[in-house]
Length: 217
Image (cartoon, rainbow, N blue to C red):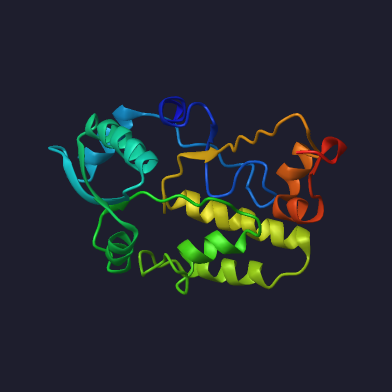
């Protein structure tokens, strides 16, 4: 993760432990990134019957940043005996492969998270757009539904803590990093409050418009 952040994201990311960023209210603070341990990876592959190596079919987007990232990951996997054959596809072809589960390992990113129901529903609930039958976890499905309809914020937070823990314990996905967005404005742009942006995102944008100093662009 450190190498990917430094080499592909130019340092603009944080090591991830699960789905929600560490400053999101739904993130479980007890979860830590799975440590880098190539020897353990080799040991687990051997125990699983893949001592001579494991071949995985993969898909990825044809966007250049995604290609760079998947190339780095492919080379890292090769060091422990995992050969990841990645097909670079356009969006339509990639979605078709995903819907039909015609892959072993794919790479995906979620660009923005405000309400926590969106991503867990998309990826882990049977009705989700990116679920496609790729997992079957009745306990997780029940937690997602309970959290969606719980009004009390404290209770809802605890449910999302449980949701993340369930995803984490079952290694349902590999979480690499949380992006850091860099925003820059000229000095004559006034009104930006970064702390409020981090905390409220689109709610802040929609209620706090920026303006030009002296009314001139």
